[in-house]
Length: 351
Image 1 (cartoon, rainbow, N blue to C red):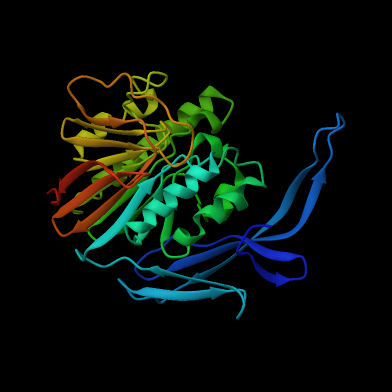
Image 2: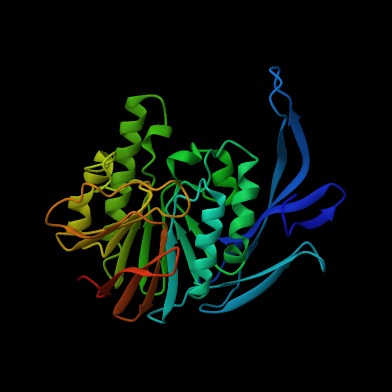
């Protein structure tokens, strides 16, 4: 049984969330995942039986909210689960968010990363760079993810990117109310674009994959062009365009092809996962930050590209970003609490 579950009725309990998604200055959706029963699989070779839960998504959408306001809520009645979330400000009021990813394995390490993150203060929202679980089609893995992250997700809005280990699972879309795997949102004076870099799981057909990527790229350019009045423009995706890991270098070809767009539209920074470490590159005015240290087995950083590498470290980590008007500061923090890196972003709308 997952610790901290709320019993709703006989045989039913909350095993996921609550988590608040799709937050704007006036609306938010609260989602929770209920386990109503279980199926037991007994392999014919005498291997241990496997238990798989039956999961159901419940949700409610709240409207008429006020900007820059923290709301408290409860799910499951008086004995249920309580949480809170904050709506984004209109304009340049200060805010804080965290970015991290690749939480799919080594659950003890994942838990330590969350504990270290919360010691640095509760963020207004969380951006996850993908690979939340080891296999998005495996129902039993999602309650584990939600249990480890419950103290974080019950206090902050959540914006996830699709990783390759999600396998383009229907559960990812249902649990986080993602209508399309690429989307954008505004928070204060910053604009965020979340891309789907997991093209391999889009379709078996190369023709379909190429058409999908072309359409997403067209959408990306339109979105970037339309966000030039924002002080900051951030892109989030699972696969990085640049990599220092020996088994990944030089990077993902699909994402690398987007670099001219990032430069043309003056992207402030890109956040990525997939590589289980920390990496920071500065190329033609754009910061590329890989923060895939959420718990998956570490990768080396043996091949840092010359001329653009600022910092690389093979250690579990997360990043926290504080935005205050025209200045934003990123700190990359290792799981032991030490500071790995610091970046100052200068904001300013492009005319």
